Image (cartoon, rainbow, N blue to C red; front, side, top):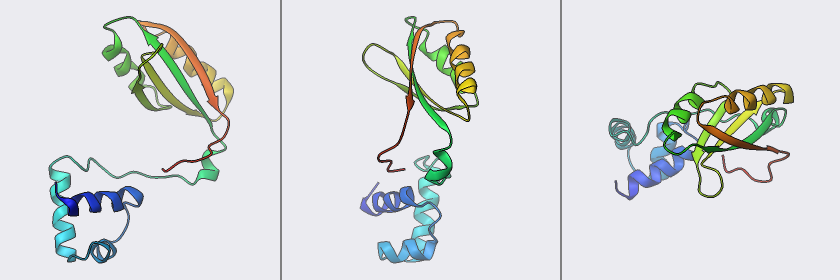
Length: 142
């Protein structure tokens, strides 16, 4: 990957809907070059897809929580697969420290969040969970 590809990815990561003509202008290359580069990045699996960013005000009406999870040794893979099937989990991260995983959940109500946490605790191999609710976001690069 050369500097043109890296610059293209930087621009697309901020706004994946930028028109090809705008991308070409920003990178000082032709539209055909941009189209070709994007196609090659997709074929190589560097660009896996495009995503939606939701207006911050909409998300502030949702409850966002981090659920830290400690697991029985050698059960992490199976637990992650089960967690991925839960609709309201936004992401799952492996971490170092007292806990092994952090799941990020987004819900409309605390009762729904409580149900999700209970569901996580029932997964075979989950030893313990600790949940923190995000009260506000001071900065999010998106």
